[in-house]
View 1 (cartoon, rainbow, N blue to C red):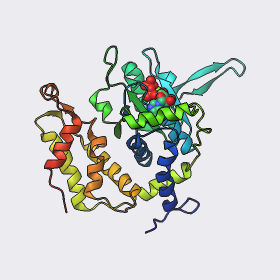
View 2 (view 1 turned 45 degrees about the horizontal axis):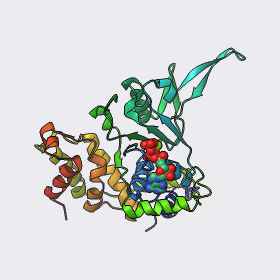
View 3 (view 1 turned 30 degrees about the horizontal axis):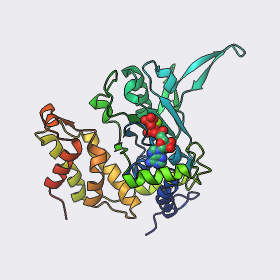
View 4 (view 1 turned 180 degrees about the vertical axis):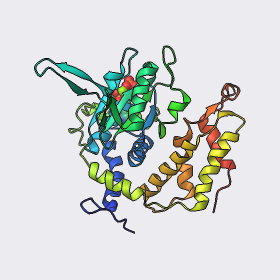
Amino acid sequence: MTVQTTPGQPPAEEARAALVALRNEVAKAVVGQEETVTGLVVALLCRGHVLLEGVPGVAKTLLIRTVAAALSLDHKRTQFTPDLMPGDVTGSLVYDSRTAKFEFHEGPVFTNLFLADEINRTPPKTQAALLEAMEERQVTIEGEPRPLADPFVVAATQNPVEYEGTYPLPEAQLDRFLLKLVVSLPQRGEEIDMLNRHAAGFDPSDLEAAGVRPVAGAAELRAAREAVTGVRVAPEVLAYIVDICRATRASPSLQLGASPRGTTALLRTSRAWAWLSGRDYVTPDDVKALARVTLRHRVALRPEAELEGATADGLLDGVLAAVQVPR
Ligand SMILES: Nc1ncnc2c1ncn2[C@@H]1O[C@H](COP(=O)(O)OP(=O)(O)OP(=O)(O)O)[C@@H](O)[C@H]1O
Ligand SMILES: [Mg+2]
């Protein structure tokens, strides 16, 4: 069926085809990591932000750059160092001696896709400035609000192996990220494929030469987002989402279960996923498919469970297996 959109916008069907084609486009530069690409598309459709977890060198930066190029979006990257100030992220007023006035110099958040690299290396004050911009979609300097771009998606990276000298995000701030995507190490075959490309002259700094072309843009994203809001959710599927989140709160291995914000996040991501899959209604399988990435950073394991080797993903799998699925 065709979804109606406002005149002047590309039909939603075309937008969907373009977003599905995005995967092939990104694959011209990045080997594998399909789940991360899909997660970024879901975030763009939901106007949400993502946490990217992965050790150094697994193509987190390359992935963001490629997605931005394939969607003709602007992107910026900032390394979150211990001395980064809030104004280095949001922007600040700078005195211009020629005009004798203060001019606002936009910080790197004034972009579509913002890669906040190693967010936990920066002290809480600067983290808070970014989180505020994420939540409010604007930056307020000297009482004057300045709206950020649309779309505006933050991809914040965290290195899972370094704890020394870092400032882990508190639970309340993790909850503000729509998804947590894990950028994993490549399989052996994928790594060989990657090396073959490099041997054949692939240059990660030249995406155009790699053949990456824009397959969609802001207009398609707008049409897609509008179509996603028309995706129906049956009462029993809605209740299923609630039951999953409630089950995390009752789990004896967790000291913190998913918040009600987590419940709404799972509804949003499931809808976007259903639409990307070509449906205008959400199935329990859509909910299952998105539960891990949507909830894994919103639950906190008890130290005992962690010592026994439990993981958030493993617990969520257990919850999904236990909660009764509507039919
Ligand atoms: N899956 C992959 N496909 C293609 N190239 C890859 C892949 N993984 C790593 N590479 C290569 O490794 C390089 C390093 O990737 P990149 O700088 O994007 O990593 P990163 O995860 O951002 O690292 P860091 O955490 O240090 O910032 C890429 O430029 C690319 O050449
Ligand atoms: Mg990087």
